[in-house]
Image (cartoon, rainbow, N blue to C red; front, side):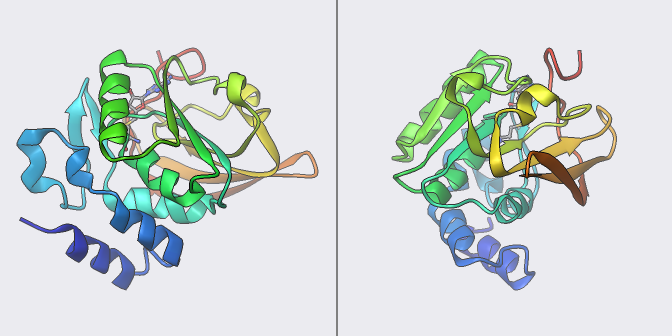
Length: 213
Ligand code: SAH
């Protein structure tokens, strides 16, 4: 069984993790607390794992890449679309720190409950999990300094972009359901949106009004 430290050591050595806050956040969150009990032995393998409802907890290297590319600042207001196990939100909660907050939306009630439980059990109090269709974001707590998707969407709709502050960053996963998708970084600058493709990836689909199906 692989342990947490050797996984993070590898991600640092490979340059996937390159900033001290992201390294601290990744070391602070125990992935074993977010995977189903029967998969505990695989908690520190660097690949996605099933978490129920046909969904997966992302691979640690993908969470690390996204944590780096999101360029989170302390005290920020962050929106996550797709709570799943709560692992990714837990990592980002360490990056925003006690003055900041993560609002995370999950459409499946079983996972919203599970994610919320995992987060609370990990002693984290600055993540708010909401069970709803997050495909249109969560206007109630907008605007956000950062927004990120943990599932693949056909596109990022204007209704979600409108919830991003001026100067804010949004990480979207855009591409076909079940095919190869692209992680894209959007920046709102002077009211305009700059778009930068980062890497190819494969995520579960966003299901809902602005998603698939
Ligand atoms: N960040 C998660 C990964 C979750 S996988 C983790 O660390 O475990 C993506 C999640 O997005 C799934 O749980 C799926 O149910 C959820 N999802 C899909 N469509 C959604 C929607 N419209 N609104 C909110 N969540 C959605």
